[in-house]
Image (cartoon, rainbow over all chains, first blue to last red; front, side, top):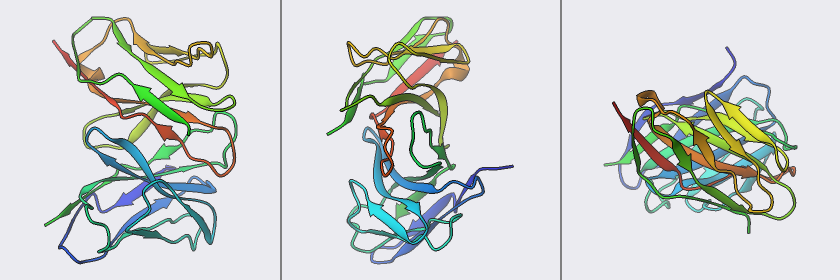
Length: 114
Length: 113
């Protein structure tokens, strides 16, 4: 079945550590996205990528980094510079933007700083 | 910049009640509009969409009409069920390469039997 797989589902991080969230898709989509979800805040865009080896910052990129070495994969690293990393992280993918282009979402990773 | 505003929740209804969740947007040009649904602990699923003015999106008894004159895309359902309890997000897409969906803050719906 085609879809987007995020792992792990739950992740715990100690203060000062970097952690990497995995996102893999087999939909053959060119574009991939990372969103952060906090209660009452909706979804805020962290990074997105339209093509391999290229990506752009979203609205809240500080403290995060990404790579896009393969079309299928778009991992997100939450660095120790991210002051408040506890949140639900959602990865999505789509064809390149056009009229009516929808995004397909993974099941999310819940990150907790302990 | 472009933005989406949704009515704040939570919305609490009894089973078989009528549902309306308001959504208005600000955007240049002619965006596409979407409603996504999120069940507890899960990612988002597309519920319906509309790509131009006066289009009506519909799915699973939910409907929304793209109203350019009022910049709105309100979600409606005639008779809600307990299984409709979820968080609903309104979103827009500027239909341009190099852009991402812009979401509202979400509205939590709780339906009791």
